Image 1: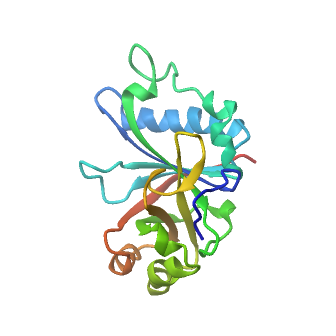
Image 2: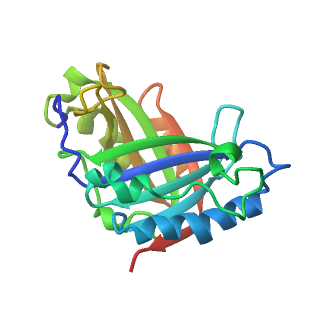
Length: 231
């Protein structure tokens, strides 16, 4: 279960939420074309990402939500500090504007998550292989999660059993301190650990998950737009 420090060499995912700043400037079609034909192929070509998938929020986004999700499966999370990753282009001539930069045209929210031992998970390579996705995000006090099995028994297992989910993946969020060390937590100084549960499910399961999710958790439902593989 979570400890005070985490090894970024472990496998995990990069969880990227995004939204277009102004659809009059950048249309959803051009945004998707850039993502699917330019950006994700370049990411896969760096060699540090095994597979990827793009999703869209099923029921539309509120003012505080991001409608798009990109999910990257990463065998070694140290890749996210590598030069190949840092060198991925954010400019392209197909993007509008004087700088042709996606950072001027869309807003992003990045999360780095590693597999948490002791939590139920299917093989990581299966992420994003075709099923629609329900995400469950919740926080648990660090001292509570230190007891092996506590988070599973009290927060996760009730959801999995009630929704009869057979394909689930569980992760803990990574944060980096000012000294460069990594820890599981909402931020480097937080007493809370943020968990991300990915449920690959059929239709109608989202409401069951909502009813049995931990208090103050966030449940979102996504439909698959496209999946990608390095092979």
